[in-house]
Image 1 (cartoon, rainbow, N blue to C red):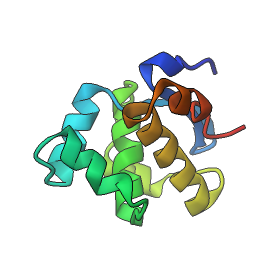
Image 2 (cartoon, rainbow, N blue to C red):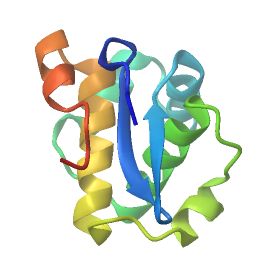
Image 3 (cartoon, rainbow, N blue to C red):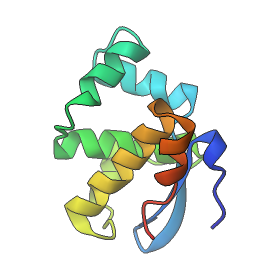
Length: 115
């Protein structure tokens, strides 16, 4: 699956299918609300230390899937097998966050969660 790294898209194998994910402005607003962050800076600070819970990973991945146009809930995503299990989910979330908040070079390097 071709992804547009300039748009912050990443791809990953979720529930046995290659899927596109993207943290659009709407998806980021959703995450601001979910994490009670007042703005994008506060949201970025929330993730800066790299400590993410399973619930955090689920919310980030679900928001990325919805940002790319999939109609899934957080509960749907929580039930989906992710290639690489918890480590794979963390890789996807980090790639999405790097694409949304990192530099162009960081986003380009993190554009594919599955090599």
